Image (cartoon, rainbow, N blue to C red; front, side, top):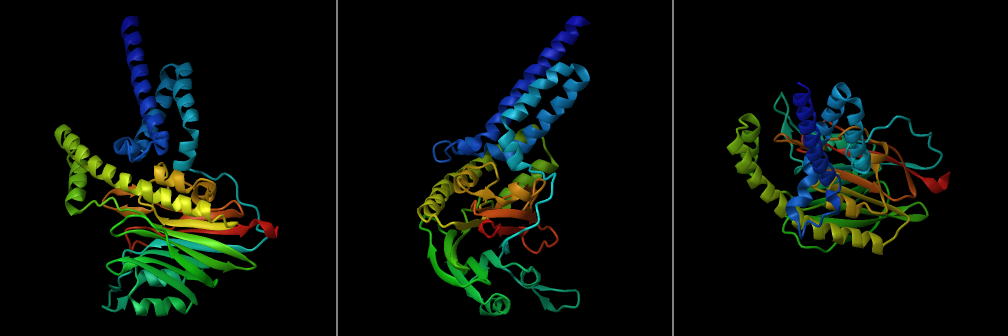
Length: 360
């Protein structure tokens, strides 16, 4: 029996070792070049799986052989940066603000189409949400730039507005209570997506706002059906073939996003405004090359003051935080939240409160 127990523990430890390797690959995948190694660069998507497995081994070893629990705990420490980026948690409240505070909202609106209510009356829940958000700066993606009616309604609350059309009438829009001094499209290759830089008058200063809608993963109806079928009927062959097919599509998209992210990061570094906000739909998780590169020198508002996974994409059983908001160190993040109270789009809105530090 001692031999059996020894073999069992050894097998479990080796399996824990494999999980540890997977966890660390996922944790450090943002440093893998998507251009040269696109499939490995997608590893961050599997982080929650290895996180759960490593946590399970922690519990297992505590019950079976307590000192062995140090191994999965050390693995967590080695991937601590990734862990707190993917799953931030706030144990203290932010200090009371002493300076000027602004609210910034970013939202992929899925075209901002009107709906019919129970009485058959036409309503637009996304428009209503934005107008009632009390945000000072609103950053919209997949906004119908040719829709004059929507622009007119938004300008009732936000007198300063600029839109940037990419394709099919859709683009990004900045609706602000601060005057917009200028706009520029950040140059990079994309058929349907893009990033726009907006300079806003911010008291005696200028605020650089970059709104992004990076390359989509291009999962069509058939791809989503393959994924759903894998979840409903997870037999070995179906998962193997379906997983390989979907990973190929995701790898293609992440390889396209990489130079787009490089272009955005380069633009921000070449325009070093004290007050900078970079936000939008990145189509990439917090553990991705795009998130890491664009966020260099900036603070992720959700990581600073958000809690939990913060799922922002909410369709087709694909639940990830792919909408992000970064702020320069001249701001103090007071609060940040993914608001799942509205599901009129395939994304939830993300908002944050930023305080100007120099007013303290």
